[in-house]
Length: 597
Image (cartoon, rainbow, N blue to C red; front, side, top):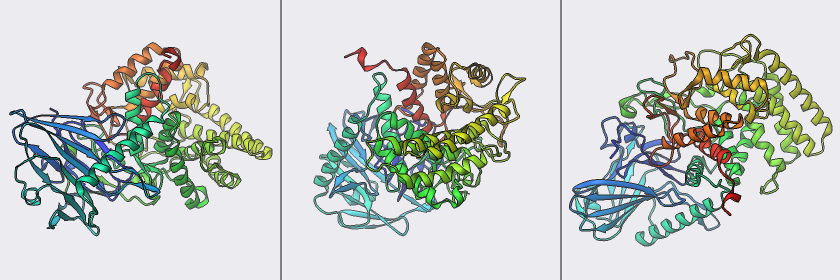
């Protein structure tokens, strides 16, 4: 059994409003309310050795084994707890999500069911939510069949058919029938709790299995792709359409590195890659919600200026601070709340606004297709991309202490202009098509002049510099260059020689604000796999892909980073970039369906 203090063996549940991470022993160790970037009332994951605070855990008397598994094609988790005397219970975890009264029911609520399956099981329960980012345990008040937890201005209520006295005093008691627990809004629970919770369980499972059924998955690695897709959807805050980079904050990129960042926000770049991956599977519901989020971001952007990230509500200011009461993941603080990267200049964001939005002009399946007004709004973003294509920025790796004209950012500006020309042609605006094509050509000429290093014989990561980073592998994906172009081949060879570490890939190998990178960046390893395939080394690509899949947690997921010597996962979890890599590479490398039917 994995030690929860030294493992990312965590199982996400959620409903696109709230989410939680469950450890291998049925402990709810991370969960924020009223949304993903809220107060982590369940914070044991970041609470160091204090694992009895900020947790919701069931313990089976004499427990010797815990075996979690997801129900097929859903984020409903079932953990079997087994005791030395042969008794056992199943703990069923989910967040309700289904259509009700003509809209999606996705409350700020966590549901748990304890189901006896063998012998005479006896359990105890520790439910100890915290408040104010781990400052103190929430005070409680008791009702006949409920407990209120005073976590802030909006208390939460546990409604249950378990003995409330036993629950409040953490006493061990026998489980002789299903026990139901609904932790949600502080309002009376209507109806019979057992019947209502069972109905929620069935409706939630039906929703997710139906959603997964609509995915256009590749033939091979279906289980991995479906699990990645479900988890990406859990990273969307459906109310606004924002997509967060991960469900956690401050899991360090490497041990004791202080590279601890809050990823519970919507990076324009990360969300672009997420919708791109889900588009490949036909999950247009995520795209449609995200496009609505982007339209609001563009509407609020002064002069078309876009910052790298926003809150899920579209708030621009994300002041960075430290949760002093939390020791950090495995005691490796600090635990950061907010992210100062919102103040950075990252010019690739303009392309990443334009590229997903373009689909709205072409895709007949969408409920709301884009129109001339959307094009005019998008042109304001393209205008800033044009103005900034040769200006220094912090780059996609968000350097905090240096700026250069990053090639990836310039190529994204080129892509913004190129795709705007496509849209202009689509809507019958030949004068604007010529206008944007001319700008794209000008940016391309600048990139070829400034980013190609004649002496080194490859593209550089920044204008006038020969140093490399893995983002140059994206030049093919962005349709800037063909994979068989000698310039790309030379650049790929140089990147492999410089940044590849066995089966893995670094982002870059130069010192940054915190020294030399110590771990591989999983998304970049998937870029390596993609480049190998595109350059005719498909057998090697498949081998590396299989090895990356073997690094997944028991839940079938990946975090941001990986120690390329030990194979241990680090960084925030589950990380959308890494899940995108699974989906994209599976689609590239899979056999076709026509091989089996």
